Image (cartoon, rainbow, N blue to C red; front, side, top):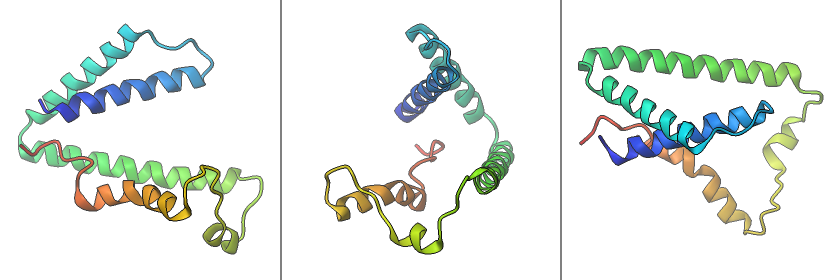
Length: 127
């Protein structure tokens, strides 16, 4: 098992905990979060044990889920937005209340997109 798998499963448990809190419930205990992380790690271990063609089908399914969820989020945002900004406002206006220089904020903002270009974010099959 790669150390990244444990970090991803811990992050997943943290996101589940945040979703529980956003629903107005009490936060999950540390033990419950650890249990979720361990369970997800075992699921990923089972996925990594599949043949490469089976992993390919799983990858295709995951891609379809991601594309579908992205499309549904865009549709919901367009339908539910109380006001719509003009194209000029969307592409030219910025709001930086962080106190950092604008160039630094831009570079940090595009960092996550650069991960997808390098294949860094999801390469769990490598050695």
